[in-house]
Length: 425
Image (cartoon, rainbow, N blue to C red; front, side, top):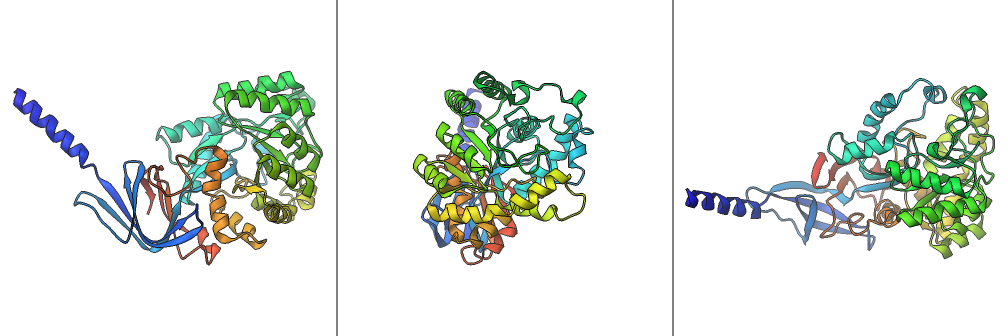
């Protein structure tokens, strides 16, 4: 009996050492670190990791899997650093909040998560929702539902009456007096409590609305909304927890206050002046432009009744300015990470950001780098993701055609692997 047990153990050890590998034969492979396109490469994946990259086409033993992408261009899984995975634009959006329970929001979010992953975005940063985004992240991580890897802010933080105050625009008896638990603050003590509460609930990142916004029914879209001591308290408290803070900002003064506080990233940046760009470059602040959101909002504003009048006017005035600002910030050398604000427009159309970025001068491969390596750098996970290199997690996608020559091919992602598992082929 002892010999049989030992023989079985030896067999299992030998079998484990011969674990199945996947050989991905790539006709073209984008090196996003060096921004060049390699030809005829083989990526070898074992379990959830990339273990080797070989020049030429190779295959393994009989048990190994071979993926033929010889006619495709292969690159790391894409990263969108600004999405709202819980919802999606609709002319009924402003009344849905009175009808949908938390469970309704969760079920509606499931297809948005899947669509995002099938579009090639294997990692996203969700910057604000109801808190369902935290549960969705956990469900995806536990393999219960299909979706991208999510880093989420949970609820956004705003002052009373600010862009992310959830009671804007309702009648007074429904407004109540939301506080830090609902992400509404007044003063540095509230600010610290709101951050700590967000961390307690499971947020990976903190998001503040440093200025007014376009799509909320709050009045001003550009004025600063926090005093300096409030932003300072948010950033200092988040730093104690080892997490970053992102600042939604359209107006320039709000951006400057956020940068002075040590904010990690500026989102949108519509009215950013050159002085602020210089401040960001000096401080190493990331810029996440979300051009697609601005362009989409300006277009939806032309549809009668799509937005409430206060939102329509802001969208038409502010929306389309973001692309021009992005072009200036890019030429100034501000650090840029790809982000779209998906949810303001239909999920799965995130690829449009590539088109808008390259229209104003960004090179095609730089745009792809912004959605891969730069996203990983912004999140602080460049040791795990962002490039196709040995030791990295196997997040790999492929498209027909060569995006270095034609960025339009990013619209159709034909192969998606996340964590070494093929989810689209």
